[in-house]
Amino acid sequence: MAKKKANCPNRELVEVAVEARKSGMSYGKYVAKRMIEEQMREIRKTSQEKQEKCIEIACKECGLGSEAVWFSKDLRPTTPAQKMMQEIINKEAFPAKISFMFCDELDMCFFYGPDGTARCTYSGTTKAGSDDIKHNLVMAFKTAEQVLEKMQSLYTQ
Image (tube, rainbow, N blue to C red; front, side):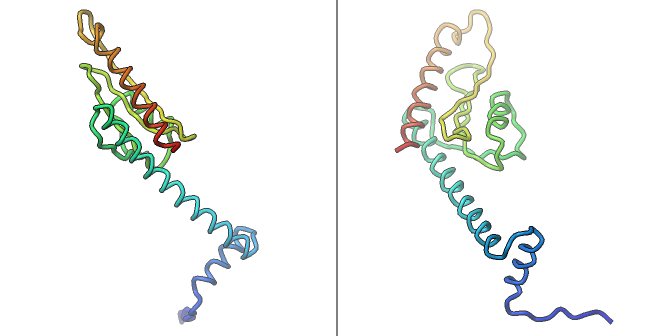
């Protein structure tokens, strides 16, 4: 004969107490730890939402369009710059702006590093006689500098 589970009105409290016992903590410490972890998740979420807005504003003001995208560990990078960015961040999800700048083959990714500093990864190729070598690369990196400075100033306000 199968045992019936008791209908406990405080089942969630009992489950938390069991989890606390398994972790070797007192009930109070375990609950406090869980509350702090939840608050930290909220802070990270809020921080990332702020980062997304800062990226969008900075890119728009510098003429790169304004839509930031969310990257995750599960998303396969399509360029070396995206791969470098994912290796630096190594988070579940984070906002970034992908731009192919003013060049034929220059990919730049704007994002915030783990310490909250505005960052950019880049990769590309060029060839002899290309306008990229003569003008566009310099213009692209000057624009990148402006975007990074604007991102940083917006984020630290």
